Length: 128
Image (cartoon, rainbow, N blue to C red; front, side, top):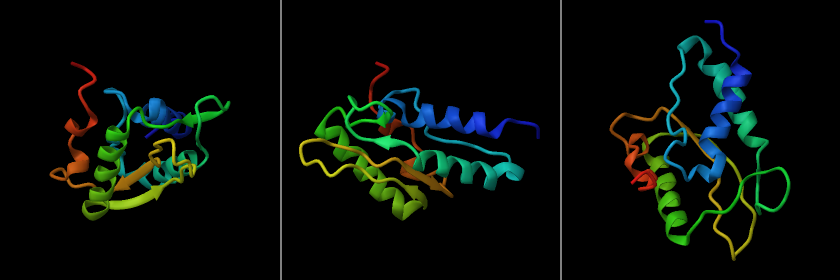
């Protein structure tokens, strides 16, 4: 396979975590050819780990706070259930700000097709 894995990872990060992942086009699943799996996962985790999470007004911030408390709670519940259904490959940290709702960027692997994480319907109704 001839692919620019670094460019692919940058696109994945932008799609998955841009707008805090609160868009109907957000990357929620990534299928990788077996020969590239370890390389892509390592690069994906490194790229995600370099993202700045915090107030949107700070230059360089990739992930800002969630739009609503309710949405934040729903996403955090999905992440917590995902820890029981799949392998947590990486989870970022968020600012300690009691007045803002931040979701830690999270990457799971070994996600079963029948798990809640695999379903797209939890992402909201933004396309209606």
